[in-house]
Structures are given as structure tokens and as C-alpha cells.
Amino acid sequence: MKTIQVPITEEVSPTSQVLFDQIKKKVGKLPNLYATIGYSAPTLKGFLDFEASLNTGMFTPKEREAVALIVSEVNQCAYCLAAHTILATSKGFTKAQTLDIRRGETSDARLNTILRLAKSIVENHGHAGEVLVDNFFAAGYPQAALVELTGLVTMRIFTNYVYALTDVPVDFPVAEAL
Image (tube, rainbow, N blue to C red; front, side, top):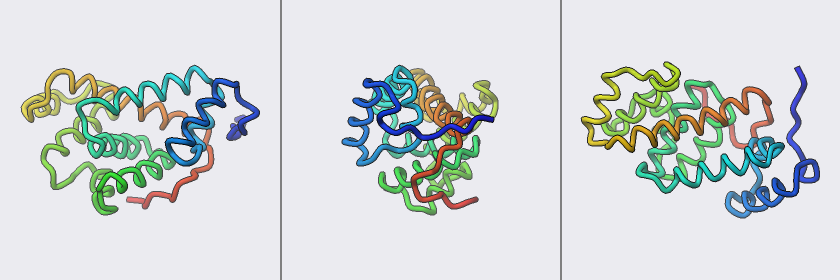
């Protein structure tokens, strides 16, 4: 299989270069996975727009990071586990809590509802267990939240799959194994 290299700025389109500069300003660096997505400027732009949109939704930053962790755990994505462990701790989770989230069990009943449903969506290719969907609505989430959760899961599946196909170097501290 062809090895995919992380591109240097000069190897991508001018549109991707502009996006790279925006990412560097926001994140402080250009993560290898984002750089690799930048081989396709429309894909990088679409991904960043989708992410920005979902970041204004009804789920809190901590809940979004929890979803990223459980999805990345199910998909065994070392890159996203590393990146989102750092992000989750920056949002207020302890390292121990990030491990619990990846196991799918926390001390927060409402977060568990989200995690169990997100995990089931991934494991069952969108066909989550009916009881889990019912529990989600019983916890007070509106129908829009189910659609938004699906977006969060899908967004993370995308980055998990890009990593799986490219195996770019992980440029964050490696997440502890479960």
C-alpha cells in the first residue's frame, strides 16, 4: 500500500494553505491529520465548517469531547484518542475520567446516555439500539439532539478513517491504553 506523507505547505493548494494558517492561529500548530486532510482543500474546508457548526450546537464542549473519545475508542484510532484526550482534559475532564469515557461508563448518568447511544451508533453502523434511543429522549433530549449527535459521531468517524487509511504520525502525547 502506498504510504501517505504529511504534506508540507507547498505541496497543497493555495486554499489549503490559507486554511492551514487559520488552523495554526486557532490551535497553535497544524496537526498532522488536518495537514493530511488538506491534500483536498474542499474536504478540509467542509470538515472545518462542519466542526465549527457543531461546536455551536446544543452539546457542551465536554460532551462533544466525550463523544469524540468514545467514537475513537470504538474505532481504535490512536491519533484521535491522543488528540481528544488532551482536548478533554483542557475542557475539565481528569485523565481518569477520559479513561472511563472510553470504557463507556462515567459517574454522570446524563453523559452515560450520550456515550451509550454514540457507541451503539458506531458499532451498529447507524442502527442504534431502540432502548438507547428511547433512553436518550427520556433524558430530555429533543429530536434535534439525535440528529446533532449523529453529526458529532460522523465527524469523528471521518477523522478516524482518514487516520486508518494514512497512518500519519501522531503528534500529540499518546493516549493511555485501556
